[in-house]
Length: 201
Image (cartoon, rainbow, N blue to C red; front, side, top):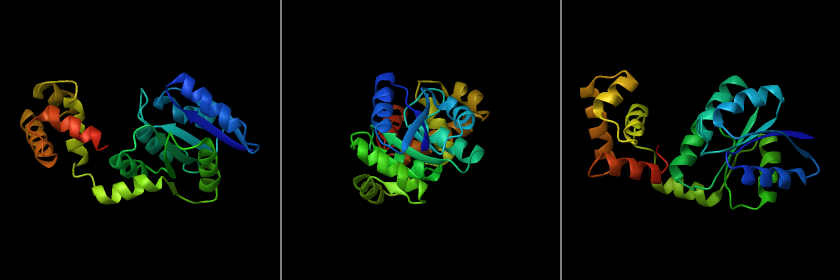
């Protein structure tokens, strides 16, 4: 039996996916969590072979949890599922060490098959999303620009962002200015919106 960890913050969705996967004769959902920061501990405690992670979760995003899991348990295969088919998410997921990336409206049988394929050493990517990611190009934001822009998302002042990220206010201004320019936005609020829509944040 393939031992699976399922991480999804919406209880009804998580239980539905678990029930559908459990109908497969060779898959056993041995652990379920609702937060990204619970993923690694659950994967270790239940000795899972595959982690199926949603992107949008409290604690840590699925992408952040994937990167941490890849470091702590490199043998565990990672399948990322998301409602948001954004090309930037796909790139970041692959960079974090994900083995598969699927959108949630795919049939349950496709998810089960992806689980089997990653265990065989294959990479599984939603073809429509792969094409869109190639057309979109790479994320133009540096990791520091992403950090600063993400910190600005809640309306924090430059001084707050500087304190939070241990940077000077001038450096924060420079990063924000660069992020606004690269997203072709008029201001930081619009830059956050554009970056989120493209999956860059």
